[in-house]
Image: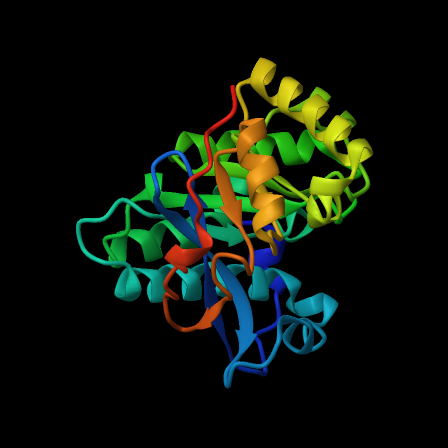
Length: 255
C-alpha cells in the first residue's frame, strides 16, 4: 500500500528534536502523560522549526515528528509506568491513513512502545475542509488502539460543528477559554456547556494553558480531570520535567 505523500515527499534539510510537557490527572493525583512538542536541535522554539518546513516537506516532517517523539519517549518514560504520549499531527499531511501509519507502527514496535499509550491530537486551528477524510483518519487510528484528541478546542475554525461529524476521545479546551476563567462568568458559562456536551458524548476533557492556582481551582471544581500548563511544569527539552507538587492544592472535585 502506498500514497502520494510517500512517493513525492522531500527529505528534511534541518534537524529537530522534542520537548515534553506533563499532563496532570487531578482525580488520580499523578502525571497522566506527556505531550511531545517540536523544538530545534539545540532547543529552539517550535515557530523557528516550523518556519523551515516547506510545502513539499510537510508529509516527511509529520512522519519524522512521530518517529522522534516515540523514540525519545521510549527512552525517557519510566519502565512499568502507564503514561500517555501525546503527538500532534497535521490532517492535511495524511494522504492515505493506513499507509501513512506504517512509520508510526514500525517505530512503536521497534521501541516496544504500547500502541494504547499513544494519543494523536490535531489542532482545531487547522481548517479541516474534508471532514470525511478526517473521520477516516480517526477510524484507522482507533483500529490500532490509539487515542484521538482535538487540540485548541473553542478557538479554531470548526467549533461545536466538529463534534457533529465525529467524536474524538478527548478535547483539549483552548487556553483562551481558560485564561482568567475564575473571574469571568461568560467563560464559566461556556465551560459548563462544553462539559455537558462532553459528558453526553462520552468525551474526556483536558484544560490546557493553566497558569494560576485560581484557574486550576475553578476548573477542577467544575469537574475537569486533566490539566496541562505552566502552573504544573514548563516543557523540558529532551527530558521529563517534574510537576510542582506545591502547585497542586487539595481541591474537591466537581460533580
